[in-house]
Image (tube, rainbow, N blue to C red; front, side, top):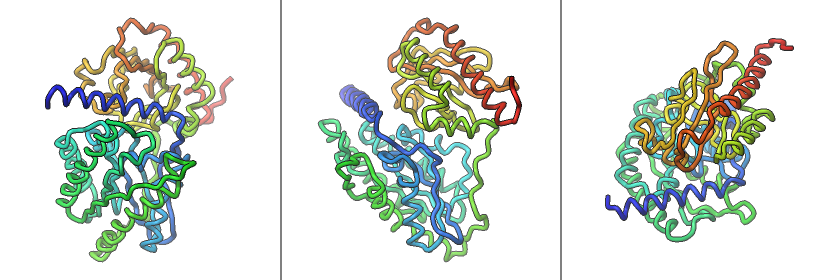
Length: 408
């Protein structure tokens, strides 16, 4: 790769980061990423990805691709369908397997992959795209049972996005076209799999980022490919015996209440703390995180964030139990410089302090992040520790409520 190629990719990554920042006021689905439709025997479908799968323009996954796919696939097959979604806009092909984490793929009768827009506009090299896609599909094929079908959507038209105009968008469209050609070849090499080139979306003028109607059209295209593969699988006698995917279990008892409040950026007290910390520390983002299973969940944030990210891709994985972690520049730190999520989020400065539950177990952090590298001393650790202590009091209060403990 030449220096000019590297410079162009750098410009494209910054352009994409700005476009994401410009979307700060655009609604997207932040509720439980699951939807069901129909009655009777259930087909369980896993939806993986970003872009159209993320749910831009609607406030619930019931109206987004997740819910629309459940509806259309149930109407097509005459069976009940439950669709679960894994992913976020900041997911990339290099981090896709990490997003699946420790999820048991044997639970699913089909997997639908919808991703690539962010990789296209960031000009991800075709070799990187192909290697990442082969790794993802091999991981899925190894995990599912009875050759459960895999359906992959092509990248939607880049220039159909109302925000994507100009030279970078045009280059992104060319990259998307090439990536779709690669994807079709790769998907074709996997048994019982199909590739679907999505039609150019027709956005409603008053809803230029997505609507139930937009997602319904895409769902119909995907269902048309998935339904025959599901029928073939059933014809081979590969019927499921389980009636439903088991709900998530939580280690920390207050997690459900905290994450329900996170849909509104956190409880009032946690919102107060992150907003104050952002101003006092002079950073772009202040966050209270919750560590549960293989995910780092955003319990409260001073700006828009994903619902959760894989723990292995987070700064929090490296925060000690008893003291703060400061990362002046992630791109110069061997622990983080090859991390695809941190590179894509453009927040190379991090300072985080641990938060503990009533038993003294570390359950999360109070952290601040910035889009430029900064000296470690630019954050006063006693200030960060004070915010962490206040957040800890709030989380322990919620824990006591969940346990039925009466406090004075």
